[in-house]
Length: 95
Image (tube, rainbow, N blue to C red; front, top):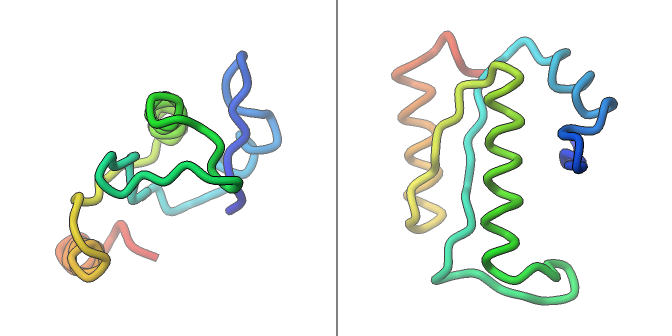
């Protein structure tokens, strides 16, 4: 799925159609993490803006019926392990 388009009115209609079309309702969410946050040409937001956008993205997935699992603020290996452990413990929610 492509990035979600957040507007003042909520989720862009095309993105909403995409979210409704998904039969798997699981979303692993990596919220902004201050310790590794980088502001550059690809990420022009300041940290508080990234937090606000993250909150909207999380809410959009929840509003469309997704079960949102927050990823731990840890190494990539730890996050990978968390995803695989979760999917193993909840096989009906996985891909």
